[in-house]
Image 1 (cartoon, rainbow over the protein chains, first blue to last red):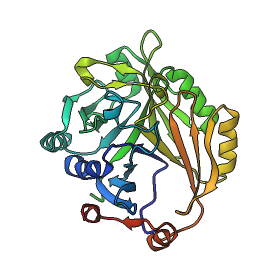
Image 2: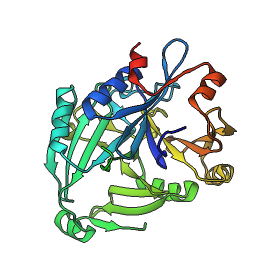
Image 3: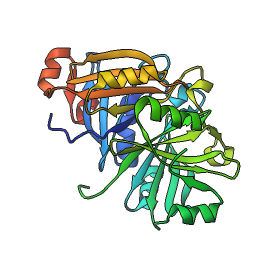
Image 4: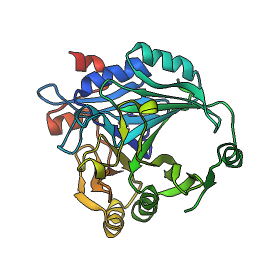
Length: 152
Length: 163
């Protein structure tokens, strides 16, 4: 396969309508589809989307335990954070225009990242972040009154 | 787009994030990069890595102001339901990886097997019910070969999805 190398970890969100999700994620967030696998009946079996060096796999509710948030009362057991390197405010506006529900507007956080939080049409929650000021753990520990360690 | 760095970081919610971090270290060989706790020792944020990729382990969280009707829950709080899973690319010896996970208490839901798409995979549940799929590339397979083997339609474009 001529596909670029797959990253070591990839999130695989489940959708009730994964084809609609593929189209929406492209329009709203700018992710690019790189692989789409369809069954005989035209249903989506597997797909991959890329965004810079990142990859996700968009899929269906493939077992009774794999559910879109829309079918489990809006709850999320995992979410996806997208770390970006430019124009996070423009990205948020594009997402909003495509129908994303912006749960938290872009705002610069105490740890030096500008971040926003959005919900897609099936209820998956996405966070986007862009570092605007590089801060050390010592700095944010002091500002926020938290403790950062590298071991348990 | 070629020069930009944009990465996806899977973020998983646990009832007991500290236990989850310990378990992910022992079972899967993930490494803790940073752990942020408040003055009561509660986890605010954490980052673990595996072969250069990162993921976050967080506690369950609800906040009508920040999340509206959405809630961030462990599968253990939802009768085992999950809205995502994580795919982990293993470089070598996936069978030994599976044995290590099993020994640490992972529930192996799919024993290691060779798939038509050129990977050896296994599936596991962690103690709180998150689904993990491990995959090791074993041979290169073309779209044409996969189509022949499965009868499925492979494509790189959404246009064919719309057709």
